[in-house]
Amino acid sequence: MVKVGIVGASGYTGLELIKMLLNHPFFELVYLATSNGGEKIEDIYPALRGVFHYDLEKSDPLIVAGRCDLVFLALPHKTSMSFAKELLDKNVKVVDLSADYRLELETYEEHYCPHEDKEHLESSVYGLVEYYREEIKQSSLVAGPGCYPTATLLGILPFIPYLDSSFPLFVDAKSGVSGAGKKLSDSTHFVNINDNIFAYNPLKHRHAPEIREKIRKIHGVDMEVNFVPHLIPATRGELVSVYGVLKDDIEPLEILKAYYKDEPFIRICQEPVSIKNVSGTHFCDVYAQKNNKSLFVNASIDNLLRGASSQALACANLMCGFDEGLGIPKISYVP
Image 1 (cartoon, rainbow, N blue to C red):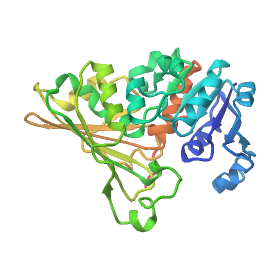
Image 2: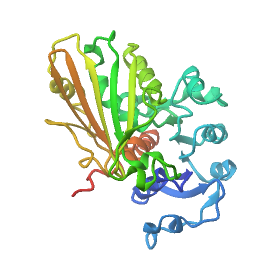
Image 3: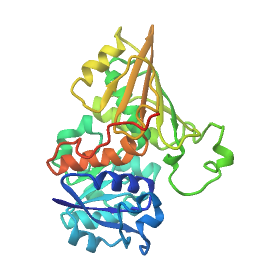
Image 4: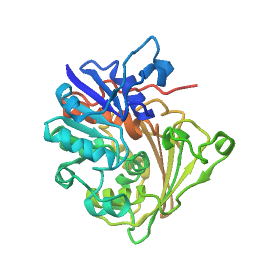
């Protein structure tokens, strides 16, 4: 058994990891921590009563290193890098769900803060399994992609070689409220989100440079990315629509089928996708259609799972030599 821990266990992504790890055949959950500790996990999440008991501990990298072979860090950016650095120096494998190791140094510092662990940043691997599977297998530090970049990149990357890069990509993205985390705010207040939908940080959101950077790194093409996220009155789920201009005459669905023919968690759909069919799963559903040179790509994921926790678990599986699908949920919350 591989002994694993979660630091930042009280958040939504921590809960999703707990739910999956409790049924994992080769991972043993031995450590749960928050910044202060002192609470019972079942008091924070009453759904765990009668299923799982744990007295949350105060996060301490020395304790983690003594107990765990691998740790999931579900922490805010900046906090995560300082914790990860100590663990990596003690040969503990790390899957980081924050932004701290996702980006190249210049991009990160422009959009977040000064980086405190440049050494490990250089060796981190981006946790988009379909594109970095072999690198993840050899890595001790994997950076989980953002939920919006995950859905956007899985949808648009197969088409980058066929797009006219002189035209920008336009990304219209919509996410359930859980993507904002547990912290209360005006935008997530029931009165504001119920029966409502609105954009936030249009054209300025820091996931845009993440999408642009990964397109450049994977395909060697630098494209302008115009990204507009929206909050929708749903608990979970994410729907992304990407618009580009084709330079070649292609059949979009045939491109997707060929590109993802061996990928078990990418489903190519014959009609526009929905969030209901992927909610509660690790699947990414993708659809594409063209009108002359105009391309429309549609992708949906569960923002807490494929956009965070199940993607992190898939990476952890690979890092430890297991099949990436172990413990991964596959049936959606329907009806």
